[in-house]
Image (cartoon, rainbow, N blue to C red; front, side):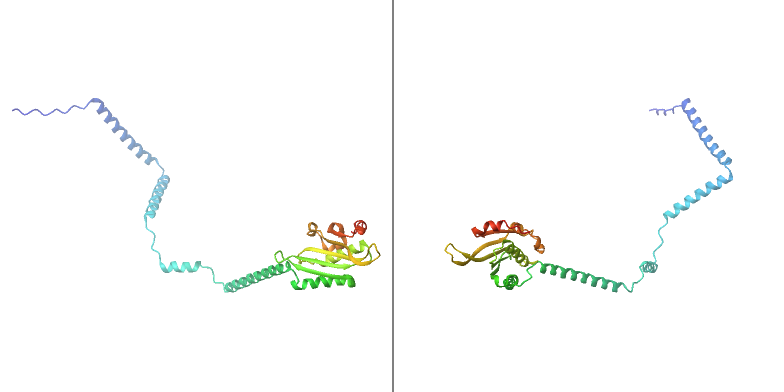
Length: 261
């Protein structure tokens, strides 16, 4: 059997040859231009270019080098040097500040306790009645009849009642005395919820018989009580500060027409 003939290699076309020739020419031209450009570069520019290239190489090499090993002793010395200088008075200042703070807190506590004490009744509960009686006797002398004072166990407020006698029959005089008595029985800190004054006088009935009877009974107006300034008792309007709860019918007109300011 005859051996088959080997295939014949195709011949290169004319276009491929022309393309290879053009590429070769361009490469040679580019290299030639580079060589000509370098030859035309001034010596100063060549030196600058070399220096820039060497600087870049040095920077790249430095960036790739590992950090130098740390000396423990040098690090300790640097840390010691960075510490602030010792302050011999530091402990003394801290102690003084602590003492000052304790004194401040102690003063504030004492003030709070004093304010709380001032807001409470300044008398011992058992002595309030004696205080009221002493005040009434000092103002009315023998005209003082009786007095009572008792404290509500829940509200801790006081109810005070004073009974006096009067034979003058002068409404203005009676009213002026009652205002002063109420002012003295309302000291700062004493919580008074009810204050009543009963005035008694010698009365004559239709048969000419005389006997002591109730002339008038008044009490502090509860709505006005919180607004009354007892320190200025000379300026208090009696009929605004007090309610008349009982008055002798024959004395009513005279009592109500009295204008005490």
